[in-house]
Image (cartoon, rainbow, N blue to C red; front, side, top):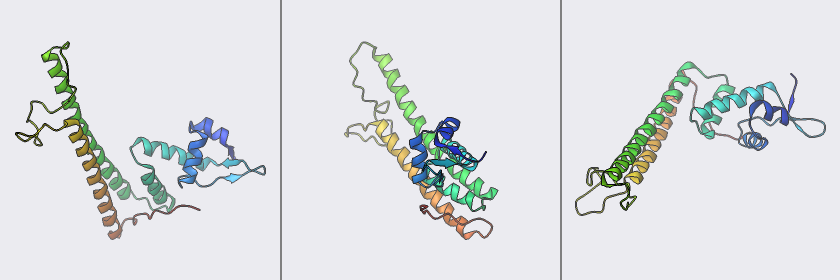
Length: 190
């Protein structure tokens, strides 16, 4: 297979034309060669790259992180140690998200249970506050109860920020370890 048209790549991958162009502009795909009439022509390696992008997105990586992973792969320095460390950092982020989502689920379950206990035809405040009142550590006597879902979502954001900091720290430790590849620098392809 020599080269493929945009239409062929769209058909084979399911990515739209706009997504392909976005990935090119974001530095995730190399700029494709052009045919004599100016149309983009893709290679088999571009299909492999698109499949890698699909899988890493499904694993929860952001495009910025995927660009860094591609950079590591392209330099041929991806050791299993680096792969393991990246996977562990991603697992930590997923674990933090799961914990926060479980908290949100419990709040919603408690609210649904209170509605059933009070009677489904009764007026509902739809407040989704912690149950019972004052049960969460953020409630203080004499103070209005906080919105428990907002608190849980804020905690989720904080957990994600902690994971980002831990990932940055891991990159620094990778840079200092002689047996691993140094962290990639972010640079755009021209």
